[in-house]
Image 1 (cartoon, protein in one colour):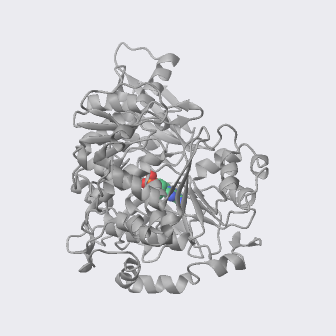
Image 2: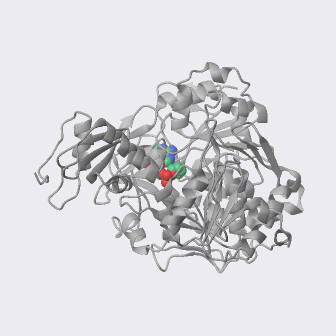
Image 3: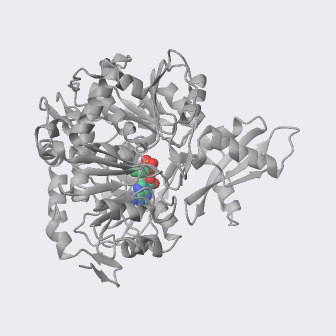
Length: 633
Ligand code: WT7
């Protein structure tokens, strides 16, 4: 049945079927209850999971903003994602359906996944992995990536997954920051019909940062790659050895023990390693998943992100398994070999829920509706969007062409820092294309000015969160000062979390996210720091200074524009511009490649020497440069 549409409000109302099925059917009253008795709400949700030992204190706020949740409890996320399912019918259910880009298919029941994870846990321990020590994972989107993450969690070794699209410098930096001794990688993966060369990049990164003692490589593409004696081992060799056979017990970790580190870009060049913990993260993300995506035992869920990002950590790997769902994973590009690949997958496997990004939707929209129309997409019940604001045009296309005006779109706003959804619709809510709707349970959100005063309805301001929540990042690895400074200092009097986004609230209490207020650029939904791109440029021998800004782009949301000052005696040329683009790609990865490199004599700076990116942006867009009174020259 179609949903109804109210044109005067531009609102889409859910159908009776959706409402009847929903896991929550009254947002307002549950929301009011959840913020009135926040601890009661989270205690009730936490009791739905299995604990080795119940917590003593639900929320310890004695060291704000370093909140601690469920302290005194013993809890391992793997006990909930795998172990407990072995005792009931879920054991025989499909946990993962995986399709490689070339078309190869592999499936894992909960039983089989648990067996693989247990075997690899044994291998990790035999190779010297220790509880509390960070293991770095750099893999393509293959099942072993999930196995590796789960095995680390099982033995209590926090993982740090570095997205497989990142390159040498990005990987080396993250290995070094986490002082990782173990690296898990693969020879490569497939992207648009071509094998990528991950091991080659890993080898270079290991040369730059010397902490890695053991590197385990999964054979995926079979391409030749260099393996160093006594350091490099093949995954399949180790998994075939007797060491893999013993029965590894899940480590009884403390509730607050770190589950993973995930690096994300900020305002400075150095990426931040955000720390998430076993219990709070599990409770928060599984609650959001269950309520927002209305998960049913018969559902086949597809989050078409990469496990290397927070979206994949939370909503491909951990929560779907905690909730006993069946997860779809696809290795490659959406338009390979043709732009119907995704729609074919939905039809073939009978996917019920698709969760993806605006940039992917815009990319597929470009090829027209006929590619989707060739496929039966009637299994879909709900859709989701994440990563950046979705433009109403793309929203409508997704809604009408993919969801056939039957499937509500959950536009979820959240961040690496938040662990799970913070502002989001529920299936029962009327929807407005482009709005992430309302705060999730337990969260009080507001839009405020520089002083912390709430702005008038409809006005733009800083998005803040007034309360702690179980899924929040606990700190930045090795840099607690930066954690305080970046997120908590601005509104320290009030004790609010600064999200780094600007937003508005409309007359119905719906939130509209506008974008980042800091020097973070979102390219195709990927988060990059201006400073990271600038340091990559400056690491080239021809460059003395550089400034990177984001410019609006119809397809990718933003594209990177770099202004470069060359060293003395170096002449600007189109060839050099190309070389610099390639250099950034080699250092950080293809997503960071500037679309434009422009040469200049100087950069606009404040008297204190900060680059005025606002001026560069106005100039690049041919707009007025605005107030220049703080400009040095
Ligand atoms: C930033 C966080 C959270 C998973 C992926 C991104 C932007 C995220 C939305 C949305 C508008 C969004 C924000 C946020 N963002 N979701 N639904 N609508 N903007 O995680 O890489 O940590 O990026 O992504 O700007 O601050 P991330």
